[in-house]
Image (cartoon, rainbow, N blue to C red; front, side, top):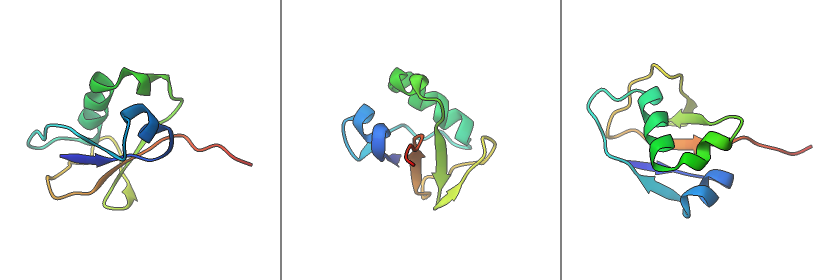
Length: 78
């Protein structure tokens, strides 16, 4: 399963996307756990949101293999 990355997430991963194994009935919470296991540096961020098909997703949302998944790191600015 491809997961798109932007900003600091792209820097941590080392590119614009990462590949993670898809598990049937995977939730957003399980995806976050898989991301942290593969890239522990994400644990240092003060937030990490997940978008599924261009909408913010809560931890209970089920992900399908066809979904577009995006990691949304914390945003700074003023």
